[in-house]
Figure 1 (cartoon, rainbow, N blue to C red):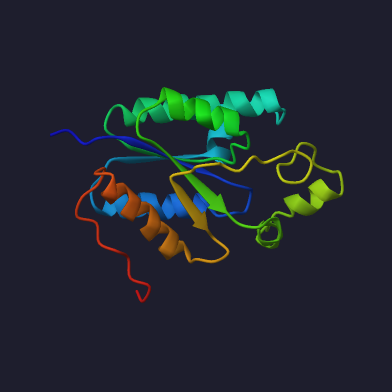
Figure 2: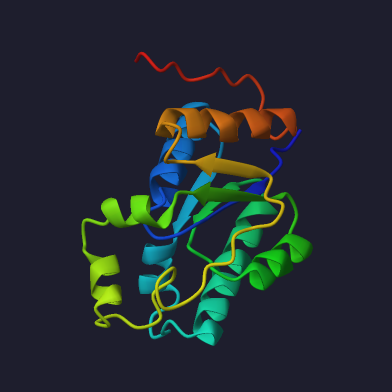
Length: 185
């Protein structure tokens, strides 16, 4: 039987922990020999969406491009993990309707926590007016209404969030034989 693909779509503010969780989930799935591809928003923007700005229209185009690639991977039996701010609910809902096995994962952390994790100082620059269209400061972030998974990274460890994602995949029959990660490794 051929492996069933899926799209794990991690959305949330900058600094919420999307890439950290996405990389950890990918690593665990790869250890179990599942075919996985990671589509990080920053990397995709550099290679696939170069030249796009941060207007709503450009952000929508970027998210649709990531969604298109993720869907190609998924329909070929790969678990595509997309970690992108993807601030607008309407576009995420569009992807959910036009793809198969789309799993929306809201990586949730309060703005103050995200700001405290910001090693590049982007939030401070946005607040000072040096960066325009910064999600959570000068542009909106529309949190998912009914995501399949909510990872509260201010309350739970990365490992706990990864366990949450893998447990969900197992309950949906997308992976088998998963064993919970131990907090005491």
